[in-house]
Length: 114
Length: 112
Image (cartoon, rainbow over all chains, first blue to last red; front, top):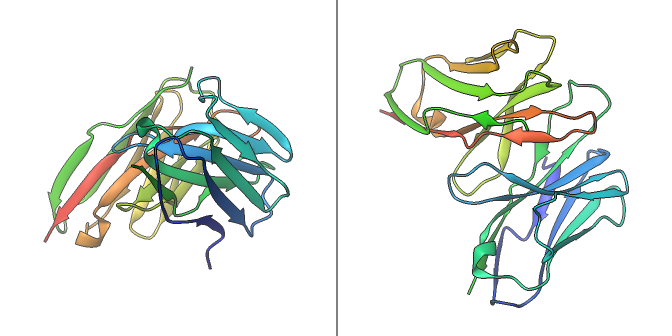
């Protein structure tokens, strides 16, 4: 059973047209992450939520925003997508109580920009 | 700043050969290290997690070792199969809240 679910799997949008990607989890983990991954590169952390506390990385573009309305759901909003934003977007969760907890990933959303 | 490196970026082996994948990190102050598998166009699947106090973890044909003092982890896959073809990534947890730093991965092809 999928524990971290991302929708949609594939998203095509036009240059400059806002887009929202969604992620849900059934694990009840306290931390949720959004990563951007481009071809043959390491996943790059965009944001994370520690419970309801939002944290963005210093180099995350202002064009990217996120919402976590409750424990189970997290959204990534790209306000004005550019061609450079075409990538795989990965959502992940972890329970931070203890150092033996693994990250769990969804299947990702592949974003294409026309 | 923690940096994670995986060399080589790609390798090809014949079926049945043992695979040895390397992961290096620059700061030994880690909480744990996790190995993942990524199939094309998919998310990451967790393979093994080694806590900072552990030296190795095993699961079936997979064995991962950790040497914090030298900043290295190695993933061994015994008797490789074509189904093992994928990209393998390592990630180190660097903070108490759960920040992870990833390597770029090693792309593996196992030929029949």
